[in-house]
Image: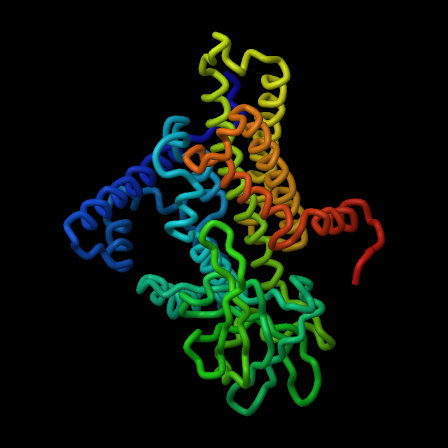
Length: 411
């Protein structure tokens, strides 16, 4: 069989070690639940990682460049795509159930929050000395950028942080904010106003329990990911709550830390959709090999075989695009270049996932709508990410401008 991507012995050892660690956590969690015993704290789990068999592989998992997100995105890609056999993917707890029961969105948002903090001046020191210890205690982040009148168009946001003598006063509204009800910190993107003048856009870290913050749940949910509108009414933010660049250019400039964080978001979406694609394809191929009442497996039909082959090819190409994007992001170079690759990865991965789910439904027939098959829920995940948090048409607009030099068609 063609090996589209080879991974080194060291990388394979890391993947296997993480797999065994996570399997052990699941087994201990099940045992603790049956015995009505408390689980380990985040600090205890971190100590287990640092002292256990994962320790030799931390160099692959952690960035040592002194800036940027501690976890390498390319290591996340390896874990997502090489972390289990076909039997692992098609049996046990699938991706949809994992999203419902464990809400992994809050951990992705925490990663975005840490990226926003660490990408600014002196960000690594701030991350290591203040916020990573908070994370070890189990205190997570949410990311507040989307607004009712602006979406994710940061140039149009209206939330304002007015600079006072020793603090900022934050006012505005954010919407479609995941995990807002269970977060400890909110990373808020807002316009800075100082001396009555716009001073660009800043990234603020605000404790969620701060007076003046309220929220209302939205009547939507995708596989356990509850979302909220969040309101900031004269919220007092200490001066050190402003992270990232202290000022972008006068007149509303967007700091690089915002784009650095949004690039990470695109990459995480790509990784999720590659996992969806992989799981849908594995289920479809296993099903297509099984004999039917006619005596022939459905996979013997040329139409099905061709569609599965095309879906597999698109998965591998999307995997290669995501590999290139994660490598560029981990270099921590120009966010514009990383942004082009990250947006490409998001686009092709979501398209590959939808196609894989579509052919899986064709293979399963109406049984694919049965919750036990997971095909319907997988399709829901893939389809949502074609329009959220940014739709693929806007991604193509962006790529048309950056790759082809075409004029902007939106403001």
